[in-house]
Amino acid sequence: MSASRQGMGAGERRSGDRGAMPKTLARQGVVQEELMRRVRFSVAMSLDGYIAGPKGESDWIVIDPDIDFGALMGEFDTMLLGRKTYEATRRQGGGAAMPDMRTYVFSRTLRQADCPGVTVSDKPTETLTALKATSGKDIWLFGGGSLFSSFLQLGLVDAVDVAIIPVLLGGGVPFLPHPATTAKLELTKHRVYEKTGTIALEYSLA
Image (cartoon, rainbow, N blue to C red; front, side, top):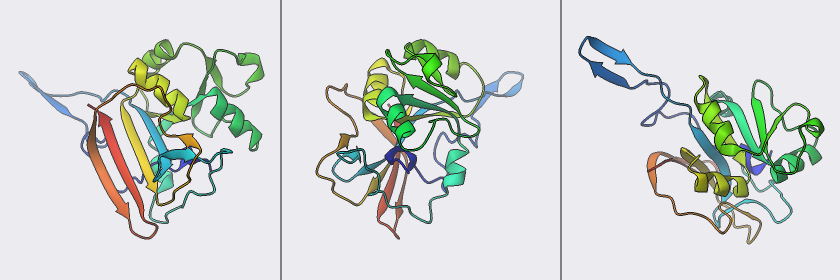
């Protein structure tokens, strides 16, 4: 399992959770409005701030038995990858596409004809604007850190979900590579998984 697949647990309701639609009072009654799809950077991270080892390793990720990965995956129907993450995923055993999930790869060099099963785009703002304008589940910014940094700078990230794994790697792929923009976050949910010492934190962009 790659570092980005760890993500969050789904056992607790958070403020702004999709399961409870916000309600807007109107003069003629109560109008229920639909939440816009969110772009969520959901990853596992070592305590010293890396999402993969120096060679892209993910064997340091502890899988906590109390995390409901089925429920987590059910929150998404679209996945976003950068070129490096896409190519690494293919090297590990096939295509990057996942069942029941549309996959977009953002690259200026990859050709659509060479990437079966995924959609290649070099226009992130246009692509994300169109995706968020359609109905559906949340959008998983799978990785890697460079794509997260780019999307953050473009204002395309709505939430950050990080599972902090109790390990020090000493080097590797950073959570947020330099240079990066400053972003303020608001904590929406947290949980400690005592069996493994994993800490799950969920933030929205302030």
